[in-house]
Structure formats: structure tokens, C-alpha cells
Length: 162
Image (cartoon, rainbow, N blue to C red; front, side):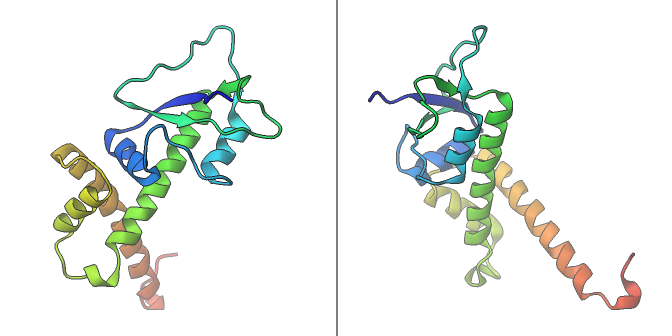
């Protein structure tokens, strides 16, 4: 059976992480993965007024798996809502991977900048300022949210806002 591809537009650093994490492009998601669940639910037949997505430098090629109840020769179109869901799922997995790797006890006291650069290199993300700034901001926001929650939980009862 022929391989059917879907092209999804991603930020450069996210595309690079995904291709590195999956091992190659076109990307083939693991069986029973959340990404494949999204594809199975949201794939539709191509509308008559729609044109298939074309590959370019900002898109990642994704292999559409064969589903028992959905023939991807017919159901191979993902609308903008389905693409947004798939993009958010991939982004959330990347953020979780970064958080798990950078927030380990062995990393306490080390320069976060150095850790982010090293994490980018380890995960196949091009080493440039744009990618670094994007990932640093994501990590910083997650860390601040976590510390804020931790701080609120440790306040004495009389200082907690209701």
C-alpha cells in the first residue's frame, strides 16, 4: 500500500525536535499514540474546494497510519482545527520532555542557559538565538508557574489569598 503523507506547519525548533525524536522524516507516530488518536478522530475526506498541502521548509511530513475504520486513501485531510490539535499535542510533548530533562536534581545550581543550549544540541535543534530564545521563554514560563504554585502552597494560612 502506498504511503500517504500529511504536511503540518510547525515552528522550526519544534519541527527539528520532532524529526530528531522520531528518528527521521517523514515522521511516523507510534501506534496507539495520542497523535494517532487525533489523526483517527479528525481526518476527513478532502473537501472539493480544498487543495492538498504542499511540502516546504516549514512543514513536517507525517505518515498517515492505516486505521481499521478509516481508509486514509479517502480520509486524508486535516482541517485547521485538527491541525491545531495535532500541533498542540506535539508541542506539549516537547515541553514535557524539556521540563523533565532540565529540571532534574543534578541540574540544580547549573546555568540554565548552558543547559538549554546543551538540550537543544542533544535533541537535534539548530543552535541559533531564535530557537534558544523561544525555548528559554517556554521553560521560564513553566518554571515561574511551578514556583508560584509552590510558593502559594507553602504560605502560612493567614497570608493565603482567597
